[in-house]
Length: 225
Image (cartoon, rainbow, N blue to C red; front, side, top):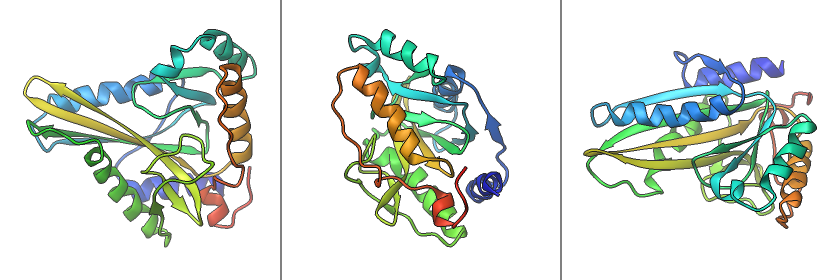
């Protein structure tokens, strides 16, 4: 039933877009390739990608430059959670089956793109998609959530999806990609434990509240995996 819930939300986002079954760093790099592809298209063009990744942690370039990163990443990989690096901002997040990723790239023409503008189209798309399931998420930060931000999607006071964006300038055009990771099923508590362990190895003192995250399965009253 939980896999069907993944399919239901994916169809609500876009019935025409196939969910990609991805693996590793290539899944992350494909987002970079997508925004480069869109940057070469006429202004107003867009491309949507819906995908799942295998078990891994995904962090940012500044974190990857920290002293001890290689050792911390190797330790995580030995426990079955390799660490990959993305181009967008934020902090470390988790990818796994049960986390549905949605990426939207947009060609914006010559007009500058403000950071908050880069979130608008994807946030609207996701809110409309949840509403098809009779769920109304709100947007905002959640105290105690990992990779917290102003453009989280939230339900019942908890974070269900995090977002990050990246803006690029290519020739005479600006383009941007906004990405969301949506928790469909699984254990947010286990996710927090994995992220916290990795960050402790890097000397990062973030403390996360185990009650700060929720899954769509929780909302739909399905049993957890």
